[in-house]
Image 1 (cartoon, rainbow, N blue to C red):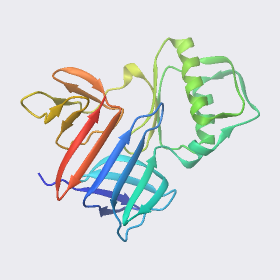
Image 2: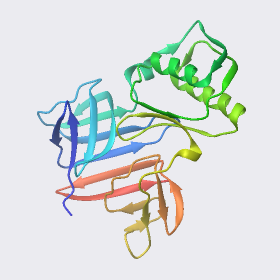
Image 3: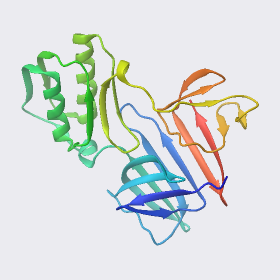
Image 4: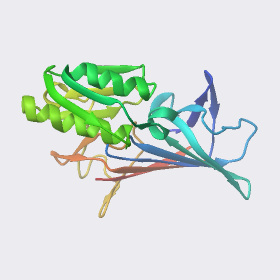
Length: 233
């Protein structure tokens, strides 16, 4: 199969050619990095970029660093918004007898997150106060408070299109779980799984010989249309 990696910028797709693309998991947001030969289609800091593998979206985020060395470009991407990573919750963020969803939306307003999927049992929180904390810290704190009230585990993540999700774990179902089996579609398996490229990224689940694993990192390498993916879990 001929593998192609591209990035989408301002609605236009740009083929990359020989390259390496990584995805890495995080507590709420994931990161990605692409390395490719310099071309005329420049990615700049704060640009919203989607990485595509054979036209399927693999990762979407905004560029937080761009470097050029010996004719090669390295671009680092993170999920979320610029405000999600730079804003802090300072004074006057205190609630009494307030619904959890209202508190959540206040946090997301500060982070300028508009594209969102919220699905959990709403409860009135007796008291919730924060001061001088990051957006990530605020969301993780609210997650734990909700669990105390409902005993439900909350999942917080951004999906492939960079949509924010704050949902009960019991309500989440991954669209597709790739299965890998010896003698069928595994190139090698030692400290990591080596396979032909798939539309898989960090934080997703796969099955290896029937056993479910959660991905922490992927490294995709493409040379002359040939590709290989290393999957860490």
